[in-house]
Amino acid sequence: MTDLDLHPKTKAVPAGTLRAGHVVVESDGYPAVVVRVAYGAQTTRWVTVYCRYIWQGSQELAWILGGSKLLSSTPVDRAV
Image (cartoon, rainbow, N blue to C red; front, top):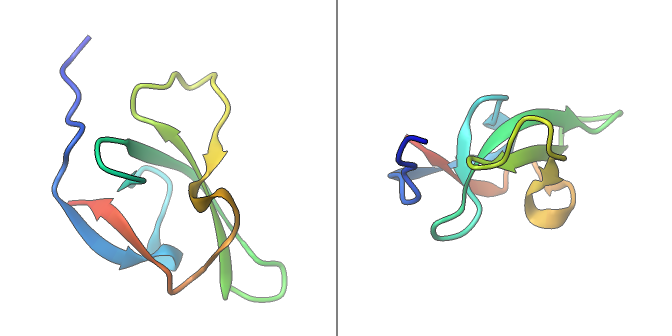
């Protein structure tokens, strides 16, 4: 197994700009890969971001960043 960078440098970006493959930092030492982004049916005001921690396997279930949908303008720490 390769060494994982658990403390990548980050930049705050709006949740609505996240795409699959981006790495976000949920909390200190917990980087996660965005696996899917779903937008609200009527508007792009709300976004649901599905992630897996970088150490999880692709067969493991994704979880929702923040526990529920986020406003598109909500700042999220993304690795740079």
